[in-house]
Length: 305
Image (cartoon, rainbow, N blue to C red; front, side, top):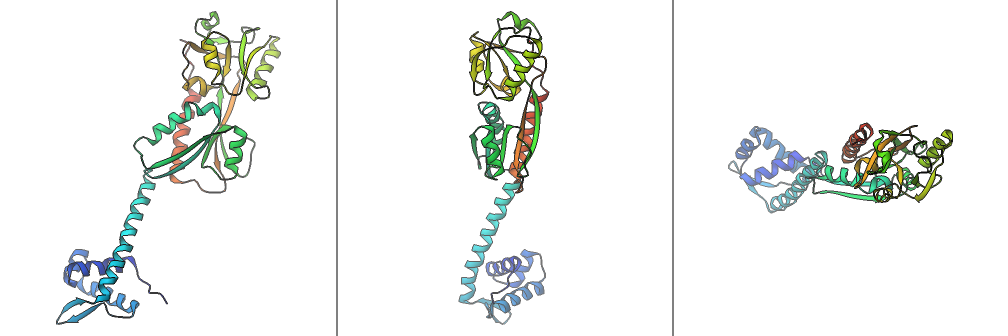
């Protein structure tokens, strides 16, 4: 049977070896001499042999005691390193994040949030990938990634979903006469050249319905996979664009102004987390930090200046 030794016993033995006496060790450890003597005796009982030769009230370590000291110090040092490392996990100074992000947030928004979160945390590693929302959904469902940011998926037992409803806005060239309006309607944009997402995207479908209900002609000049490339086209005076609030709030857009649109078109995005394993302390903290920024974007009014 293996000896049943405790960490406290190893610490006591190490101090007796370092100090050379029970009395000195007891003072350092803030314990009584009988308590230290009993602990050493219990260690020897567990090991099945004596570690010290006791003569005239003095302890002389045996050769086995010196070997045992090396082993005990290695165990205690490893424990100290482990405790320090685990405390760094608790203070968010160590660990890793695996993040999957949809295209609309991958250009500027999420990298900026991640950079702010990791500032002063050089030992935290991050794996950030950009994928379509459908792929991200499967990556989170398979428990492969820690957190995802994507268009809101259908309910699945393998995913925890926290949705956000972000109002879309109109991007216009800043010199366009329509930029003088605070709110635009489909009638204002009758046959106006537009950059839009692909045909079956929810924002495109909602825009088509809004124009049809008003009897206005929708002029789709550019068809894109993501909203971000629309902004240089708008800035060049080639078109307008209905874009999600994250793109409008966080992406560089020289020569572009943003205006409200009615009827409201809202894009729904969500924080996605694996449902079948608990989130790490680091993941939970990053989720909370990312949520704060999403709420800020959600509540930010687009400037009409």
